Image (cartoon, rainbow, N blue to C red):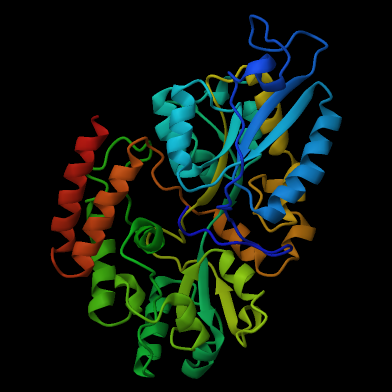
Length: 438
């Protein structure tokens, strides 16, 4: 995803590596399915023969090292009949490569997939409905609800969340000290009052919304009581343009008119991180990569742990809401060994593998692993895990790409003053209804 950054050991981030590596053939490769034992009629290898399953992933260098040296040996030790073939993929152009692989029966057995792609590939018929596999209910019960929801489509689940992330509110401690605020604001009203104090001190805005788009603005839109669709993601009319949603967008527009939002909402300068480093901005929101990168900038005088205060997105009429990011594990329909692929996916969401990957800073989706004291002792981790309890997924529908563009345009038109919030949301809801009908 476009907001991903690189990570360092022992600190949080949710990242993707863009390094191009050689990719071997899929399940129709020569020489026995690319090294797999011949499949029987059930699609699984004959009893007693080792099965090879191919796993496409987008892990970074450090993550791939742990995957290769710790995860793979442990899984194969505990599942001696299955060999795990790891294939690292570049993120750039990956979606097109997956489409081609599915069309040509060359997709792998399973893949670590961007969460916003899952419903689209499910609609194509490219993914297995894993809610039909043995042990699914136990896996579902053990993970955070919002990341799990990113796999939902048409009454089934077409993946499981292997790692997750979200955004929290990050405050500049020096600015809070200057305006006499001693703790992170807990409500939207408190946030607005603090922002007014910051602006009065000459700061260029106090509420750090990073853009007029779903990823940047939805934590505020949702927390203020807005919604994008109904609960089962089938209808926008009456929800995106409901009185509550209109009021939420009107509130954000009013903040903009009063100069309470940082210039970043419309692409202005300084950028969010520079604004924090320079003590210009009172507050921004961001994912764990804010800390993972800045903590490891050896030449920088900015010390993020010491110079910021962290807290959940302030609560409004809709509670404290943030947006979910991360990756899901999916099993492809054309897998020759779906049972073994599910065995690995299910195992990967277990407590021990999730703890192993969390050493790199990836937030576990397994609730027990995420709340492990050793994990929570890492700096700033607890706030992200806590926020995940109320974070929401971006609408998990096959048409999400089109929907996102429509909502982004509505938000921007309203914030720029080109349309009144109600008119912008009415127009967007109508256009989204049209794509939902496809």
